[in-house]
Image (cartoon, rainbow, N blue to C red; front, side, top):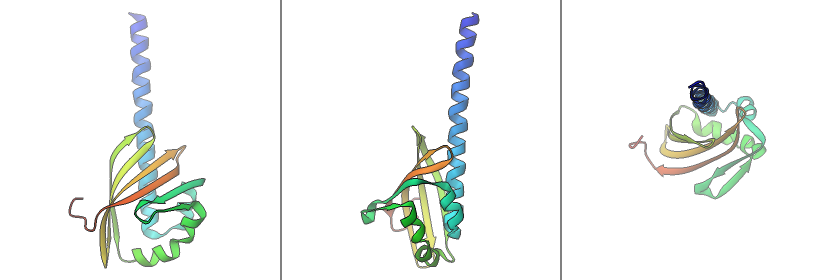
Length: 137
């Protein structure tokens, strides 16, 4: 029986580590959307690894970290007076899938976004439009 207890203890520890990791990734994603709404370049830069890639699937564009941060001037104007609502849909193998409602004064859209997070930083992100409204959110 002691071997069985040890195996069960190790299994429980592994499950706990996975749960802690998922919560840590969710915290990174929460910080991401908070910073994105404010166009907070410093926090966004901190959250992205130096070699991160941001894929805007609908536009067929892949941005480097530097290119993404350079786009914040235009983004800041677009997001002014808006809100961003997000909810984690699933987390699997270090990739989190998020449904996001971008509710701007002149535009609303529902997006599906994915984040690869490692050691508390985003290594890759992609986004694709789901709908031109947030009714399904």
